[in-house]
Every structure is written in structure tokens, then in C-alpha cells.
Image (cartoon, rainbow, N blue to C red; front, side, top):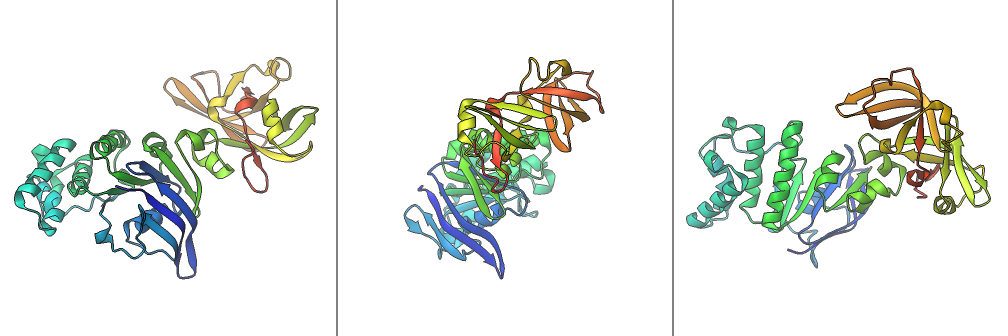
Length: 367
């Protein structure tokens, strides 16, 4: 298999534009995850790769071959959908063999492929059953098996786990990755669930309002988001944002606002090309807030956030604490502490070296 490349791809439905100058290269054998909220254009992009949608502008390549006008049946792709798409009157075996029979493969070859795929997916004993006799996870395995038997160059998966319960989604994530390693085809996986993106993708594409926002290994959009949208979308609980004023004292700098003072390391201060008194947005992740005694604020603790607890969510060994900081909302991930209560004033130490700073107008990241 060769790579898949999108160059300047745009898509219009009448006067409505849904994709804007999308550029993306998916490497050979890569498991690429496209993630974004509803309406971001991720499924439209997948359908364009499949050939189910035509492009309004730009080019789509499979390797060095442009495929803009190549029919879906000639692209050697297999798709797995959210709703499984199984024929209810056919057995599992017949569902998996259907596409191969249409291609008029010899019966022994069809039987070998179906049984090999069924063994890989652990559904060999279910080949005589009908879809209605299967659980949701078993049906999803059949849908995967139907794609695997075709031995395609590209797997396209459109929200395949959305209909499953949380526990089964975790199991199927591992199953899909195991299958991908076994068949070594290029895979493009679409999801709105950023947990799936972070745990499954070799690289991930973050989309928003029809535009590619950031492409990189899963840790990159988390650790080094390029803008405020990516920072707020990637991560659970989400990053919190504080409108602050930048203050400079020689080579040193800090950001401050009501209930907020965060000292910046020298490299962070140098990365912000703004004078003292400028407005910036500081982004703080939940795991970077450590609860401290209120009396230590401004004394032993020089970088801090103070606010009032709104909600405490116990989660076994840890808890999420939603805090109102003069109207802004932050969530802290802390060890379980039964003494924290709603309406309580709290203080958190914040490490300035892991704080993200964004331009108030462009929303692009300085750090």
C-alpha cells in the first residue's frame, strides 16, 4: 500500500462550504485518527477518501496516483460504519462472504478468507448465526471481519464504536488495533471521542469547522496545542482558561488576574512577544493544579489560583474539583479529599512551566 495525500481539498454543498483547504498526508500502514466535534468535517473527509463524495477543489492521491475521478469500487478501500450495516437475513458467514462472492472469487478462497478472519476476531463459533442473535460487540466484529476478508489497501472506519457501552468500547479499541497490526493495511479512523484518538492513533488529526487544526502524534496536541480550540478539545477534563494581564520585571514575567498569579519561567517569558500590560489567555490543565493551604498563597506559594468550589466529583482514588475563579471555570484533578466541599474557598499551586499562553485575538498559542 502507498500513502494517502490530500492537497488543498475543499467541499461545498451548494453555497455551504464544509471543508476548507485541507492538507493531509497519511503514511503507508499508518493508523491515522481524525477527531473533532460534530460538524467539524471529519466524516466528509473520510467519505472523500473513500470516493463516496467528490471534491469541489483540491486533489486526493493514493500514492502517486490522483484518484479524484476514480470510482469507489476501484479504490480498494473497505469501510466499517457506526451502524454495522449487516444483512439481517444472512448468517455471519454469508455476511462476511457477500463481497467476495460479488467479486466471483473461487469458493475455497472465500471459505479460507472468511474462516481466517473469523478466527482472528474470535467469532468462528458464530458463523451460522444471524445478526439478531449477536451482541453489539459481536456484530461489530462481524462488520470488521467483512472488511478484513476483502484484504483492502485501506481501511476506513467511521465512528465504529459509538453504539457500544463504555466497557466494550475499551475492549474493541484494543481489538481494532490488534487487527490492524495483523493485516498491516493503512487505516483511517474517524471519531468524536478524543480518548479514542489519544489511545489509538499513530498520529491524530484535530478538525474544527471544516479545517485541519493540528496533525501529530497523540502527545503533541496535548502537550503542545497550536491554538485554544485544540487545547480545550484534547484532554479530559478539559483545560481551563483564564483571562490575564502580562506583567514584566526585567527578564522575569508573570500573568495575573482576579484570584490568579502565575510566574513564568524565562523561556516562557521570552516566547511571548508582548509588552507588559498586554492581555493574554492562560490555559491550565487539571493535573497541574495542586491544592495548598490558603495561608501559603503569596508567601511560600508564588504561582497560584484561588476560587470557590462549585462541584466535587469523586472518582474512586481521585476527584475532580470544579472551581469558579472570578467567573472563569477551572477543573482540578486531585487525590480524594473528603474535606473539600461546595462553596468552600480553595487555593491551588500552579507550575508556570506547564501553563499554556494564547493570544486573545488569534487564539494561537505562544507556548
